[in-house]
Length: 360
Image (cartoon, rainbow, N blue to C red; front, top):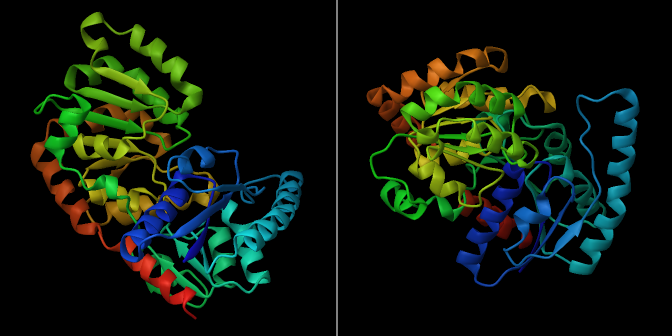
């Protein structure tokens, strides 16, 4: 079986494709795959190590842009259809899986032009422009949540969010692997793959008080790591070992399993990964990309798994963090709610949909 994966823009779109491929391989044995997407936001690095050929396909985001930028983005996206056609003709997949993001649109159009089976997966509660457009081209449509499905033309099925197998790790095992003490409080701050400067700056302002209360593991994004190291150097010597900034960590699943509380953006991945880790979170939804992160945050908060801190309210984040770190009962209730909101079968269900589409 041959599968082409199409995604790009954020890790929340790339990882579901990789998780679904792993589930397909586990059920079907060897599966040939290739990945099609843009090569300007770390997509190649995320795919590297999975043994999957990477085909760079130009694309650009089409929301929240000036008229000129929108025209350039449309032109770049249209141009991307040509290399996508070439790549799909060479690879000759049995089925194409799109997991969204602006990078998935040119390959999805190419799949339609070549009359290849196209499965489109909507990872966000409020589907983005690319996924909504692709749903009109698709052979099959799946979504992480019922709410997402209701927003897509033509309907489809709820598969759940495909989560990487790396999340099947226990707290004690994860802490041992990370070298963290079994009982120390741990705060994880992660602003998505590219980082989130507003969250970073709010954390640095509160850093001495937070390091008094917990070990702080901070994923800053590449652009902010120098500032983070300066913030660490400015801490009193006794607190420096309690703050560990990194631009990016491939072992984020272990960090999430081991942490007591997270502060994160609310990209698509939180819908699957916070439940898989059973991790309570303060979510700071970004207002970019049409504001879809707010829908993800509200979905988890409505189930008691997270609380929302708007970006305009980040001056309150220190108090909110300390309150939850000091309230084990509240965190336990949020953790239980997070686990209840999850669905471990998402990757296997989406893999089954791919097999059915390929068999048509």
